[in-house]
Image (cartoon, rainbow, N blue to C red; front, side, top):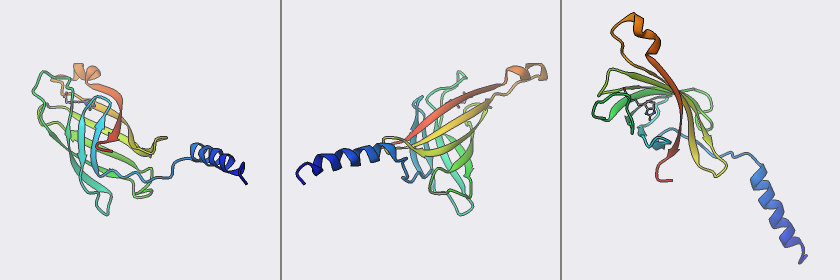
Length: 146
Ligand code: BTN
């Protein structure tokens, strides 16, 4: 019995490491991404719709950065676990629009993360310049204060 304790300890550590995380991941709250941008998502309603605000750390313009509104929705299934979602940020300080799409996960450290991909559409004056109007990228958001 004396030797069983270390064995059980090693076994339980191995199980924690191998079993995929089943923790909840919810969109509501304060988030920060890998660029240092801050985002707040308000309550998600019964239809999966939500509003929020976005304070980007960077801009493709020379304009002074201001907090901008966002609106989005999450899929009706998997509401509390690994939800897929999309949202649009309508920049208040530029004439661009960004759409994000992503999924909520709990990472190996047990922390909630939003893995996203985005398209940033800039305004162009002429159709000839359309080819250069869209940027694409990825951002990973982690919950602030966790
Ligand atoms: C603009 O420059 O016209 C508006 C700000 C765009 C900020 C982009 S959106 C994608 C990327 N992720 C961020 O957090 N900020 C940049």
